[in-house]
Length: 322
Image: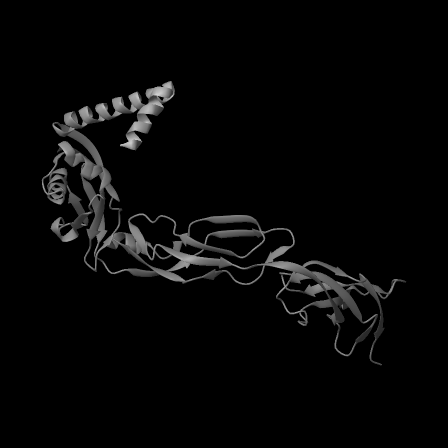
């Protein structure tokens, strides 16, 4: 009682408080009238109904079942609040109820959809329309065909980084399901196209497959990994080889080794002796006053970058047998 008296006193002292109170009264009165009008009339509603289809183990769908159906219905009075604020039940369809077994197509027309939805809502609503009006699904009950996966992946590492190691696929083959004619023509599947530029870290991604006419894959996606590593500068002292020298002929080189500077992935062992530097005996010109031969990088891992030699040529002396 004291609270009401304080409110009355406040409204008498403040014109703004009186205006707010009057506004709230009008809102409440309008809400009451709206409720009486609504609860005594049919209300038209659009409801999104989730769809789930139960399949036999040997059946694979080649086209997608809609995730939801848009159902337009008339409901009486206060019942519309149930559909506005309560979770909409899921429409469960059994594949075997709608397939005739004579073709690879399952079709559910609007009449069957309306009947199933009416049963879902226990006939408390009058179903006006359903969108889509019907569901047509292509399927197969044929065994799957195992085919290899061909990756369609292009990766360009950023400056100072390199692709080091093999492309990893979580599996190298998948099963393809489709009608017999389509399966006969499918001998491999490609991943969806991936192209990444300027990578500075290992690429890890779930990748789907390029669309296949008349068929689907199981699984629908695989995991891929492209290893990317930072490059570090390293050096090696490499002994220089002589190639194409005739039997019994000896070529002495001065100096006999060379320092090689290069960039390689951080995880690659710095102790690996995997670079070969050589001179070509056939390039030696005994008639020339110059006794120098150009150094050739004859072998080096492709992952090494910016290879440089401490000197680009060496002097030589040829010793022939007497």
